Length: 264
Length: 310
Ligand SMILES: Nc1ncnc2c1ncn2[C@@H]1O[C@H](COP(=O)(O)OP(=O)(O)OP(=O)(O)O)[C@@H](O)[C@H]1O
Ligand SMILES: [Mg+2]
Image (cartoon, rainbow over all chains, first blue to last red; front, side):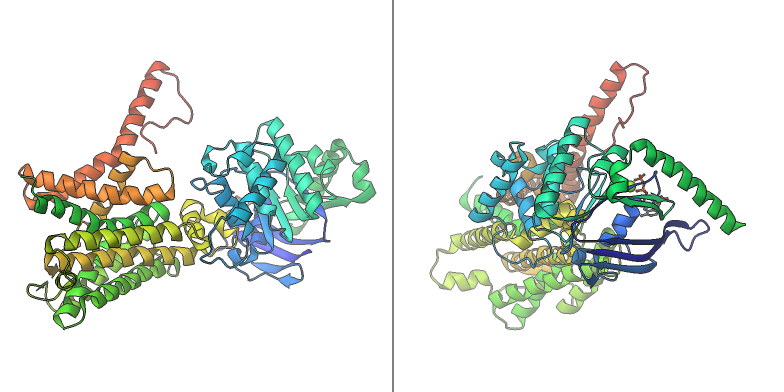
């Protein structure tokens, strides 16, 4: 479903202090795989998701989604294949527009937009049903502006918007990190529920190790722009957070040693 | 004092300039794009109308061509910004400067009088409409049509995409909308309305002048802000209405300022001061609140509170 081959990206390339954020990422996801990504600050997790979504061009490598080479597609064109939820609840919705208007825009993801009414009776009924499933009472507030919603409500709405048109790939970047623990828990459960019922292929960045292990089907660890660890199946099922942390310090040591070797 | 011609005059001006204000509303409020090219697309519309009418073309055809000329002006600003990555302010200024020469080229001189020329007024008078109501009725119908079309458009799928482009471009791009195309579309639409307004004003007041666009942006902003302050619009339909109402009130304020003895040449200063006050009011009251808060908290440093910030 997703195939990354040799993705590299260096920021500030032509300056005295180039910043290699991605250094040859290879990653292959089968349809329905749900991969959690962990790694310390600045490891390149967000950069990887941005590269896949097409926020900036990459320096080298190929990105293939659902059999289509999208390496040179502009961001808005990739949207037909990719849904996204950002860390900041403000990022995923248009605050001055209503709940139903936001959902209607998301329902047209990647399609041609014309002069038809943005929201009609049918779509409104459909939105009401979907919102009722969230259990947040939003189904009675369809014409409320999104800026009136709480962070958790906005993030739940964003999640609905990212998945309403069944994207081939869902990218989640610490999408529960800005929420209070209880709301974060709810949004995380909602994520699992939607992903399962729609059978989506997912890349999810998280700083919560426990989450990383008990959500999804596979976990990869990034460090300094590389994937240094990739675990799934039985091995992952048996893993604890402590194992993961041990693995991390061992591998990080190795990669530091590697670097020293390379530099030396 | 308040005779019919006086009242009608204020209403007529409020209506005809509201088309310009709607253009400013589209760029500033919907697209969040501070477009200065309107200062030149307004006289562009006037220049096109004046030149075509004095060359013997139909005044209504001249209005349509004015609108089209404005569309192209907005298109230019949009392409400068999106394709050449020139900042929004500078793109508008460049278009404005370039169009100044174009306007002079079109007119051939700085001023074209339209006395004793056919205009939409003379044509409509021939249909037997009562003479003194003609401009008012025509402007009212036109503004009503433009308002209804704009209300409709802003609720279509494309209209949603346009509004989201001003609100959260990152988000609407991630939903597959080419925000550059939306910006260009919005700017073209806005400047088309502004030029149409310019063309109508030229026919209404009986001349086109190359300098008649100076301060268009500020007058448009004043109308938008007055409408917002008075009506607190919560929906798109009300927002559009508030711009039209704001334009009427603004023209009334100008009329009263003249009555109070301000010279016509002072009006731009009056308008600018009006807009400054309206823009500063929320910030001033907030920083006063914040300094009070800071004072109450004694010498303690309050994180994240920036007095006077926006
Ligand atoms: N647009 C950008 N321009 C320049 N440098 C960038 C940009 N985006 C990211 N970087 C740099 O790339 C590196 C990787 O950043 P990235 O945001 O991908 O880290 P991350 O793994 O998501 O970290 P975190 O856990 O803190 O979110 C950092 O050094 C960062 O400063
Ligand atoms: Mg990040």
